[in-house]
Amino acid sequence: MKRPKRNTQQFLVDTNVFIAAIKNPEKKVRSLDLIIELIDNEKISLVGNDLLLLEFEKYSEKFKSETASYLLKRLKDKIAVVDVNEDHIKTSSEYIPKAEVVDIIHAATCIQESSILITNDKHFDKISENSIIEVWKLNKAIENLLGKT
Image 1 (cartoon, rainbow, N blue to C red):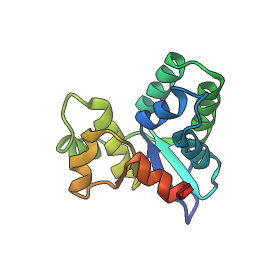
Image 2: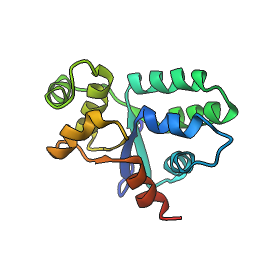
Image 3: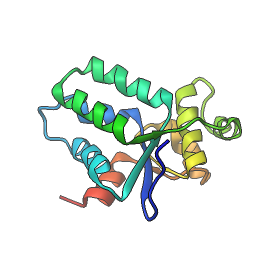
Image 4: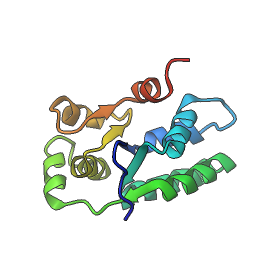
């Protein structure tokens, strides 16, 4: 398993950010720039879980393009895939609707790995408001990592 370097920021990129980057690759969208920055920046590490990678593959196939294939490969190369501890799953399930199993696992991954979650998914609002994990909306991630332009 890949281990993050010291002095790095660590993130989990939710599927909706990936979809925003690949849905219309011909459009110049900042979500695409964000994902490229997350991949290329050596001071940033990425974590995920098997379900996250399955989601990325599913949407890469749905919105098939060279951009989608490229990002999928690069993300798979950079993401440290972790096995999530049952205690963290239990904690995250207290804040996320039970029907949103994948989101529970993503939040548990962030708890376990002390990672910031980048997402626009409202299912994570309660866990963020309770300071269990740090959640950045897409606009905040773009502003913090790419600056205003």
